[in-house]
Image 1: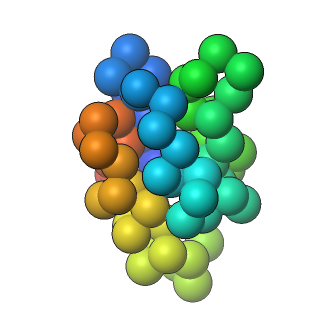
Image 2: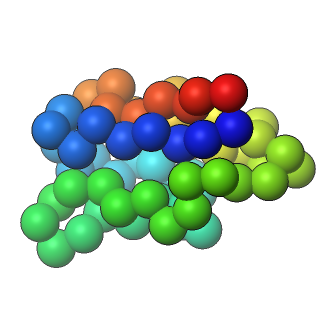
Length: 63
């Protein structure tokens, strides 16, 4: 699994960071920073929920 961020679509809501701050952070420029694009399988459900919570649909998961 790989986290893909569309930084052009990111509006800096921070839902991803609030739900999975080990993987996501909203930077000083209000754009998401992905700390680890390849989370382990054990975190798949947790990361999926954070990606799904993005109101701007700026995140997706790729197998």
